[in-house]
Image (cartoon, rainbow, N blue to C red; front, side, top):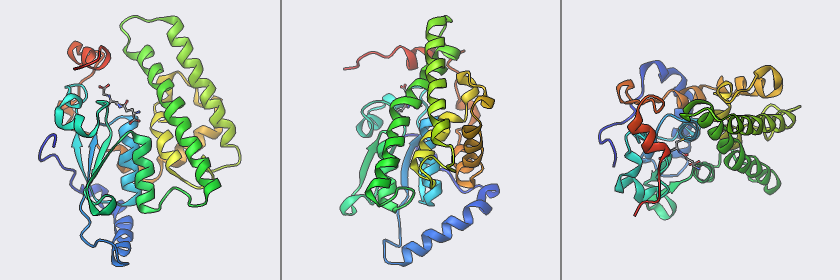
Length: 268
Ligand SMILES: N[C@@H](CCC(=O)N[C@@H](CS)C(=O)NCC(=O)O)C(=O)O
């Protein structure tokens, strides 16, 4: 376990917003499932990929413990973490009450979202046609919006040299993708009609869209959706989870963190 003892304890200011979903869970538990639900271990750092899972856990009011994986310091390479997340990327979870009542570890944020959605029966339609739609947009985020926005951030903010071709390429790809989302959101409140794990997957990347070179006024439907999703109390709580400021490292200023994050090779 990383950062032993690091556990998110209910903060006073958040208590009020948390009250309602917590009651809902108690109700579910009384209906016959495990009354003493053990908390899920969340391996997390405050980034768009990490937020997907803190948001989902908050939305489902599942009990969880946060273990900070300080990716600027190399926690993602610790053997204990690699056992559950062999791609040395967070987020990951360990659910002590997995299938058959036994623990299960899950890595890759899309897989974790689907797992938690199946476990709780929430934010993931049961009807096959509707479920396929949610999967389409979830995978759209995983294979498109996330990687392209990630590269846009890299070349616009982190790369030591400013390479116009790379900046233009990834900024344009982001613009294309927000254009696709803009059309999709026409006449829809959320990406698949009802709020789902597809929205949770996309919101973290859309939140810093100005860093990707976007002008919010170009995409009014995305702008309204972004505000709608970010106004949800569970989303606010999920995105507010941060490690101690003193442990945060800015890879644009810290060479060791930069090399650790951006000069990785194959490890034995
Ligand atoms: N496809 C992965 C991507 C996860 C990912 O890229 N995580 C980054 C932070 S946003 C990370 O852990 N980076 C550590 C590293 O680069 O070593 C997922 O969605 O779970």
